[in-house]
Length: 486
Image 1 (cartoon, rainbow, N blue to C red):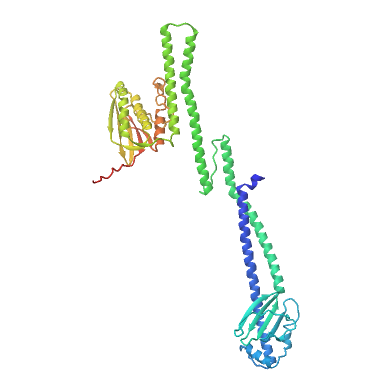
Image 2: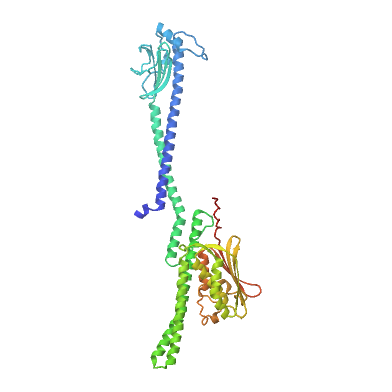
């Protein structure tokens, strides 16, 4: 249950409910206030009309002739009332009597607050606005349960006409309950719709989670389905699928690496066990012991070579973020490498042809030296005829430091060319057991170039031979210090 309240769907629903409630409350309060203001304006119009009828009726009773379309002056009425209080006509009195809900009343007061004339249902006390005795006043206000319209003339006479607001208040309460019921219904409907929409929105996330769980459980070939809409969830699914692809490939490479390493180590271990068992079976001559010891030594040396290559490859694959980078020159590294490998070239009756142009780059000199050694040694060891040439070049090209090793040997079979950088892959399987090759040299070279942010490619030449090209980011030019005058 606790997990449910911590789910994204529940949090989205809670926020949706709170925001929807705030919007509905704001709408209901605004509608309620607008409706009440509209009711008050309607009451004010009724008060103004009642005031006109009252004034005209009183003027008629005092025999003051005013045309129906002629505006009358309250001053005329109050001036006549001081002389003789008027008699309220019956038709006017009928408008201002009784205490039923919605009744109307009026009161006319002199400047001293004495009642000149009032309806029978008028309140006994009044709260008159505080104004200057010489300033006219016109005010509409709500007092208690009444809506009152107040006029004050400059000579101090007050006219008050009002109306009971009980029907309007009942109608307002009824409208408030109706508005609240409708708002509550809309809120519940919005909650149901929001829960459904949140479920629809979270369904792809649930599918992603379930698929990821199955993949983590061992089903490495399964992938998250995408709708092809390029939505945020589709983009996330594609990123996760690419991540799963890379993990799957890494695991497959790890399995293959383990299998290949086991296979490569099995042969020398088998030789060691077989030879030692053969030694222990019976007494042998000194020459036989020497031959057996030499065989065991060769097997152990091959195991050591293989283990060192595996350790080097593991270090290169794990050193992508921790390389000790510094400014170095590929030409200097290649010159030292070719000097070290010159005896191998001489032994195989091959010529090393170097054309080295300064190619500054930022990298790890020791790793780049291993890269150069592996590429040049690979070209020398796989050349098939005496008198051949291995060309080593370097320089700057298109803003990159380039290194290439080209030979005029047999080249790489087309079927093997895409696999030459794979671990333990040997194009010449017939000579792999006796040549001493581990099948890791080019894989190590590829890892070194990748760690330096570059690319390593292999291609066959049109005539004869092949070429390996390493492209590395070049180092920024060093600006010499400006000369200073003394």
